[in-house]
Image 1 (tube, rainbow, N blue to C red):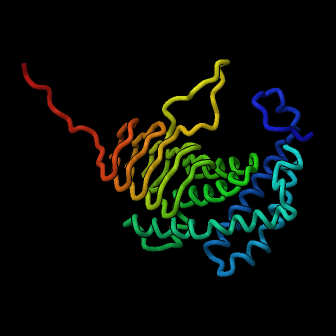
Image 2 (tube, rainbow, N blue to C red):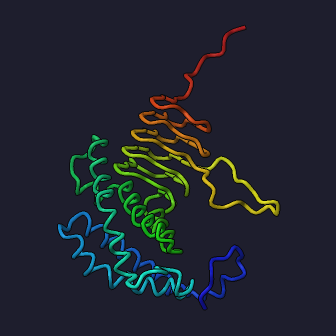
Image 3 (tube, helix red, strand yellow):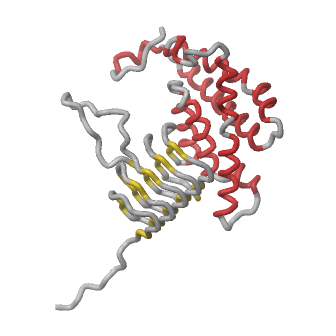
Amino acid sequence: MALERHHSTDVLQQYAVSHKELEQQKLSIRELVSHITAGIVFEEDTTRYFKAKLKPLIKPLIKWIQKLYGKTAICKATKDCVQDLITRLETIKPLILSDIESALANDPATNDPLEVVLCYPGFKAICHHRIAHCLYMENIPLLPRMISELAHEDTGIDIHPGAQIQSNFFIDHGTGVVIGQTAIIGKNVTIYQGVTLGAKRFERHENGLIVKGKPRHPIIENHVTIYAGATVLGRITIGENSVIGGNVWVTKSVPPQSIISQQPYRKPTDT
């Protein structure tokens, strides 16, 4: 039975998704992400590779989503749904290649792009995000979030598919990073482990339910560095070329060229 997305838990049993089916779909999604990454990073003719490798994976995933949410849940206005998605996925290639370049430029521990691709959790997380965000922008239900959560499981980095992230993004180390749904991140931004780009508060309707869809996460402008453990909350702006120091709590906008750090410890004066 196909169902629309719903706010109540009452409908969950009606989806009739077995554990075996869910695990099979997760494996298919992992294979899809792996082939997208390989096609972008290692293949000279990405278009040809995608056509050969992605079509057999995307088609059954689309059918699964349509089974859950209805036949109009994906590609409502297009005749060739699979090819349209493949064409859309090809557009993320320059972004993913720029993320590799950013890792090489900002991490003194490596000069090997293959090491970045195969070993860096930050790259794995952002690569998953680029794919998930692409599908999210096509209003595809469930799949984008499943892709982002697979990366979360593997890396400890939690990026909502709705977050808008421009080119040359680098997450160093990465464990514990959280980037919320409405965050906007500019070009050449570097963040370190434990950084949170989160919401400060949630508006509620008169009936007490949370208002959804409103911008509530930070805007990070170009060439910003945010060091480990920093927490940036609310719809505020971190101006370009700013540096946010480690373990700092930021809830107000800061202008470009800012350096925000903890106050140095001062010994209590004797009285």
